[in-house]
Image 1: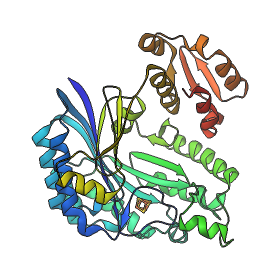
Image 2: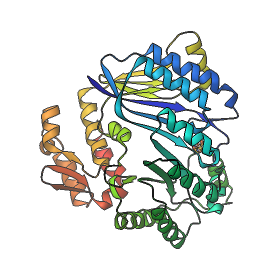
Image 3: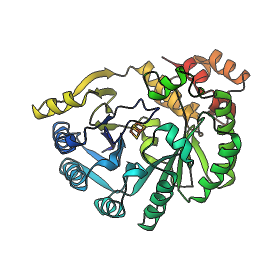
Length: 376
Ligand code: SF4
């Protein structure tokens, strides 16, 4: 029996945030019914033999824009084609500006048992700078409602490294974040992507560019504050109360199979990675004609798989087990990557204890410096 994860990409947003480079479309909500129908078709066309679904993740975009009937249709299709494990983790990403009490209650009754709220900041001026559609009051209210409605596995996303933020603002915000009572926190550094409105504003000199040194200070402050508040960091960007690590994301980092459905979704099954088209119209038209929307297919070679296992494993605070790599790939990491390990260790980026190689705190800040050395 394969333990399978399902990712469903929902590429609709009310409005494009100023920093956004994800695959999402604003002003296309009228296409949601056709999209839900296309997802059901894709599920029908992509059976996975002998699988049990351990996690389902609705990501976006803004999955909380899916009306209840569209969400029910997608769940129905999943259940028609797959066996869902009894205690499957079922996450829906939500934007605080789109939630109502009734919606929260209904999605819970449909089976969503983990809510991931894109809060990003608790400062209204910052939310405006980011071009988010919600206010900090709406975010606090959504968190309160979700908890009252019985969501006992709540994850909140925040952004660090926002231009013009002072360390004092972040210190106070972290103080409030830990009082919000979420079981899981994800913290992402702001990156300035070309072609985004924020990039344009920086180019015109209207706002400063995100400062990597300020971002590093905020990250270190977050590590200390969250640990003191009982959150355990288990991945470069993720912290959880014990037992609330994201099982879905762990499946990616541990390279277990996943089926990605929807625009731009990726799948990884039987050493083969596929990517769907990232064009919404092409996706809808493929499925209306009964064709799969797969744009690229790549068979992962043994050497690429080794590289992925090391890089993804190093993202986790548990790191990579040298023995496991040897058992799985027949390769002794110390011989194969002797120079790379020695160099990263001498730079204070890698550490080895027992049989595990791990990023040091400094290594977590400079992860890419380490990862590039292990690329296939
Ligand atoms: S809500 Fe997320 S996906 Fe949508 S525009 Fe904002 S950052 Fe992009």
